Image: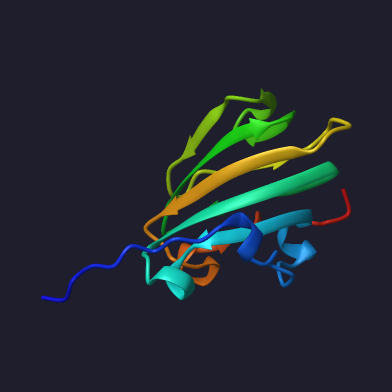
Length: 138
């Protein structure tokens, strides 16, 4: 059996992902995949997102993984099954696989989220999807 190796990185060393399509709901987001299959061989993802004022991650779900996020800074609205609800600093949100969710920065300050996917090491593995009637013309 091989010896497991720790993986360590720093926010400053991880590039912002430039290829996340707006039409899939990634609107003006600064996303970093801190730990994932590509970097650490992990079957999960730990991420960091900064949402500038007006940025949002539109309603979406993951069919193959659970997700959590923690609001470290700022406030806005989360998308839920019951519509948009206020969310702010200190909130911990858990969305099991198949649960619709998202975050809209409706404030005039940055929102910082740390988040994770349990059970998928990449967007492709997560079963990411937007609602069938999705239009990114909000």
